[in-house]
Length: 218
Image (cartoon, rainbow, N blue to C red; front, side, top):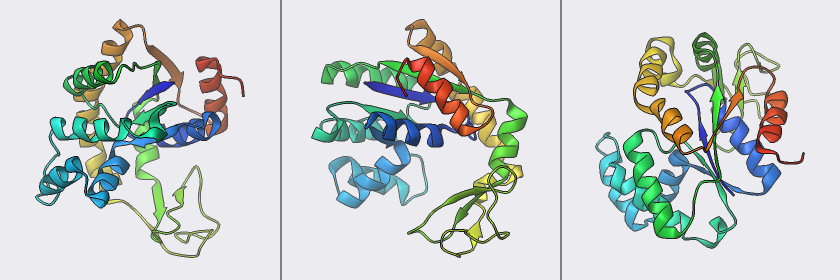
């Protein structure tokens, strides 16, 4: 099974992808994690990507596709995977379709997590994360606060607030999503792959709805 998740920043894609990956025993492929892994391993795509990352510029689509090609050829991806954070625009989606044809694979379903824009802003701005890289536990000042303010409940390290989670930058991130990534909803709907899931509410309830939508037995 090959599953792709869509959703604006703050929609909860990462949370639901991780839960579904555990439930189905599938690999969770986050574009950010794949980039870091490819760079660390020194693969051809990783070396090429690092030259752009070191300059602080976006990695070109062609290199991202090469990175996914490298990963999807590995044995651990043969039984299926969950894509998170890629593609980000229609051009990338078309390139991904070509890659799937090359690999004789195809997407099983595309899940769109739908969340109201005001809630997205509240979710993003309230996110905190443990500064201990070995722990990296996530929190939210309103929805999942730590036992002690600004202190990780698991390891006691201070919590940090990502610079791009601050309100002045959130509006720009959402604008980019609505302009560049949201058109993928129509793109995949035309291919009869799209399933929309309400991304508001308790994560466990959202996950149960996701399983019903995918017709996967809990």
